Length: 384
Image (spheres, helix red, strand yellow):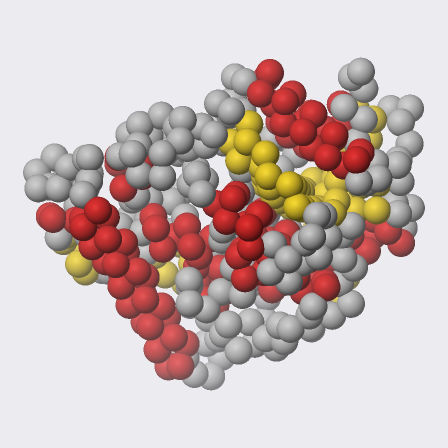
């Protein structure tokens, strides 16, 4: 049965004290945080359960999964953070506060008794971070040392981890281009690591030794960048509290060029942004534009609190982990890693065979994913 869906605008507002604001305009100024979302309500289908989708920086209401779930009879909220469509200054700890405001609104004002967090793509590690802090709060400051009051978060009643990666930081650590020698001059590169260069002596299929060298060089570049960030923060004085910067070439992965690395059904020499060579130099690669504090909070693999496997160990609610077998963004092992790491006694792993990251042109596979989610929720009394 397919329901007609009526979208509703949702606005949450709450007070926050901070040294300065990271976002422009009404999203987070004058001591008040404002966030916007869209709730999909199936007409004639009341519910005491709300499925909540949230991504740190994207708006999800135009993606197929939330609307497909609503058409199947679920009440669905696509929650936008204060950093919607701009992750340059994003602080993961503050995104938790935004998500917490939505969950509180759902339970205390909208009348929902149960909330299921749906972590899609970058929202997966966010959902795990939120739930871990709701169940076992431990974070009192951002990685830059700024105090943050993450208290009294309302835990979700269940979690869906779908086509999601381990964390933004872990993805950048495996996507940052290790061939860059000079951060100020991206044209100066190490040819032996420049895998998009036709003259690179290392071509797919890659040897295990080369992959290990490549990964080590990626991690070294990331850590050099992080060290520069920390040193720069220490140097800031007076009224200068923050600084923005560019990190060139951040979409470079041996997986994009060699489909035998973490094999799945993905298209070879391709990534979710198109040609990897073009994505690597384009303006939309992950971590391309960042502030110092944002780098430590979301991109530093050694500093970010939003690490998926670590957070997963602290959750206890039922978990459904879904892998899309032709995902061209999320590496094949990630959903299984989260499933295995989760502290939940009730945890389920499923694979949607042939599904890509966005289910583009795959309505039958989208429907299959919906049926997996709905069936899983129904068996755990998460559908009321």
